[in-house]
Amino acid sequence: MKKLTIIIILWLCLPLSGTADEISGDHSTYVQHIEQALIFMFQGDNLKAISEFEVALAIEPDHYEILHYLGMAHAQEEFWSKAAESYQRSLALMPDNIEALYSLGVAYFRSDQWEDAVVTLQRVIEFSPQHARGYEMLGKSLIKRRRYAEAVPILKKALSLTPHAAGLYHELGIAHLNLKAYPEAIESFKLAIAYGPTGYAEPHHGLGTAYFRLGDREKSRTEMQIYQQLQKQFAEYERLTRLTRAEPNNLDAWTELATLLMHEKNFAKAVQVFQRCIELAPNNANFYHGLSRAFMSLNYPKHASEAARKAVQLMPNQAILYNTLGSTYAMQGESQKAINAFQKAVELDSEEPYYHLNLSRLYQGMGNQKLAQEHHRVYEYLLSKQK
Image (cartoon, rainbow, N blue to C red; front, side, top):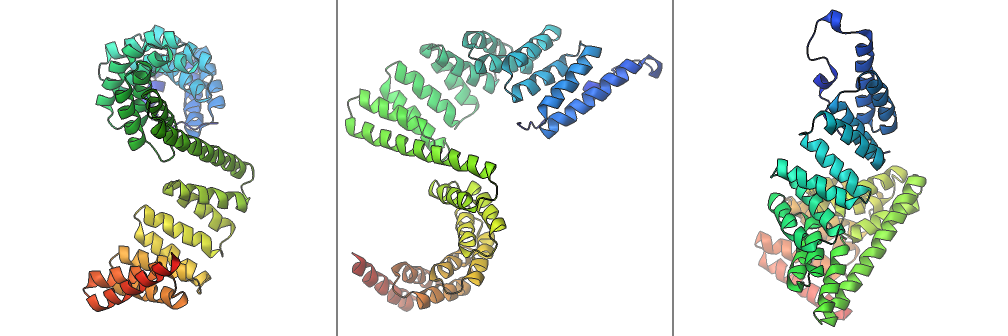
């Protein structure tokens, strides 16, 4: 079940006028069911919320706000026809309820009734010309109906209201691609990649297609290879996510997931996964080391230092752990602590060139040119031996 975050507006559930004597027992029962439904909805138990809303509306059917909430609960469970029915009942009572109208358009879109979605969402933007989500869903609906020329200005308007929306740039790229406006399509797909999350695969497919149609086979092949690689990574992420849900104590699955997330540079999720790994194996230094690297990538050096120190405590003879610890100190401006850590890394593994490079850079920043040059010469020598 999906959890829905809502703002509970209590006055929706209470009578707007009348004395206490006028509040019947039936109305009190109605209010009780509404309050319970909203609690269930807030907790993410939409099926129970639906049941409570339906009981309440059987007592007092003419509450447009509650019918809208009922539609939202149905939508959370992807009961799209039921959601549309509830929104329609709400709109029959309050025709200018823009959010209910928008929600109806979304329900039509999700149930593949794209022409109905177009008509409904056009009304949304007529009533509310700055409704960004209305333009977005209308643009997507027009794409589904293959009305690409009409979709372009709608999507551009949506982007003017919500700049840097990767999904909108992708949809705009699709529209341009189908209109054979390939340079515009390429620009849109590149912006989708630039603003999108790590691993956003679809724009690469669009780019590959646009380049192919322009006759640039090399760029097309490159983009298609990226697309295929990202698709494989996504499939692996889905597999591991399902596995960790089904087997929450499967340490191997959590470890693989953490490795994948670090590779994809999804550091925020990697932090959560490493923390879960540590819960399952609290004496594994590698998990603390991974957590430290993820925190560093998110620019949280204090948290990174804490994790790196724990890794060193658990495995005090691993040079790389001291190198990471030194990097966390350097990020915080604690130069002497960083030098001590890097020197320990060199002591444990003097043949690793990058430990010397880190020392060289640190001494350079401190103005100690002699030691900076000394370690840089060692770095260059060791690097040449590896070639």
